Length: 445
Length: 121
Ligand SMILES: Cc1cc2nc3c(=O)[nH]c(=O)nc-3n(C[C@H](O)[C@H](O)[C@H](O)COP(=O)(O)OP(=O)(O)OC[C@H]3O[C@@H](n4cnc5c(N)ncnc54)[C@H](O)[C@@H]3O)c2cc1C
Ligand code: SF4
Image (cartoon, rainbow over all chains, first blue to last red; front, side, top):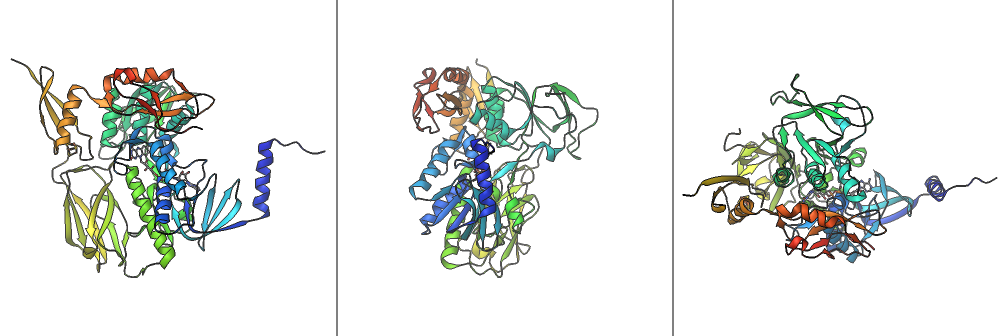
């Protein structure tokens, strides 16, 4: 007797058989992991630099990555001189790739990066494939931190989501996750979801933030919280979750600014049916780590030089997988930089790697990208970094082997907003270490 | 004699985020301080008198599970946001939908159109 299989099961089995049975091979000049803003821009720039055999491997059924679910406006002011929504920005980048005939593989999951370099990819159409590439660009984006990483005590009822999951439910599935909402963390996704929920008639009771500064952009605090009268409680956190099947309430406590710990005895019970966690994003770097690419503990991304090349020659990294960005315009710019550099690598091989200058974060700075500058650097070297605290009228100092070579004045620097400086390559060359520090001009409150 | 009142805003026209103070006399903004560039003056006056926002929302598409994302093609007065969201609630689009298609003309008499920001075949 033959067993009857549903179409899906049959398909799954067929895929499995291909996996076990045979491995297909594909050769490309440049292989790109991820088809979000970074991957699309990298592909287009590589193509424009003369390398036409470029392939994107995207695990989802469409390109665009996180942009697909960001239906709010605020994208593309720099790149298109127009304020677009996320899907519109993604559509423009996608169309540019289609015009160039970039090969886009959907539902193509990159399993690992192996020596060669090659990618092990699996997809319903390609089966199990080894993609042999002249160069690889990592553009896997980021994922959200979750409750597991935060360790909130209490029961484990339904009604607890990350803000990104809630955003996906609302914007792509049309489901409202709850009516009475408390949000932990004030990352940008959370702020934007809070506004969406307010539109939909839900009551966002408060947004809590462990530290004394918000994790989100100021414009989002104004336009998503202040506009709807949603209180932002700094130095507060959730210390308990109550409810059997569904969340019924949370315990909210004050946080000591110095110790960063909840203050016992300050817990207040806030009834709610939904808890959203918006405690930030982290680069999605399992593949890179497994491949032995050297990582930066500050940025949580790969350690790269000014061309976005990682510690493994021919492998580049750009976008949220390299470090978390607030603005997609800069993600695209970085993707283009990586795309051009990868094209150059395919054409002329790797540049001399000896005598690289190390770039390190100094006082007040949590990380700097790039972490290395090679002797090939010319003109101005763009350095992007984040600060650890709020600094008013600060000065950014650039020290070469301990001696200041350049300084920059800024109006304000805050941890939620990425900062950048451009330093002459000549000032960097010949030194061992470049250190970037920040010093407040006015005292902080 | 008219009463002077003061309103405080953070200018979000650019990442600098200047702290603005707008002087109000009889409902009219008479002075803006704290800005670094001209845009801050305009922002301060708008915020103090009639703040405007681009509205983004979702509408249903016939025969599709996924809703279509939409936005106003220009900022509309903030006070009309609930009306605008309400006006969109009953709408159902028929595919194909193209980015830029007008979903609702002159929403709430603002002169702004609501346009689709996603394609559907
Ligand atoms: C909620 C939110 C709001 C934002 N708001 C704004 C804003 O208002 N204005 C603005 O300019 N910017 C905003 N940003 C920032 C900006 O949108 C993002 O930084 C940018 O889109 C990230 O692009 P990316 O390509 O690096 O990553 P992603 O968009 O995450 O793309 C990564 C892609 O890689 C794929 N992938 C991952 N691993 C694999 C694998 N192993 N195999 C195959 N494919 C894989 C994923 O499926 C995904 O498609 C916002 C971001 C968020 C999260
Ligand atoms: S006033 Fe000018 S410089 Fe200051 S935040 Fe507004 S736009 Fe930026």
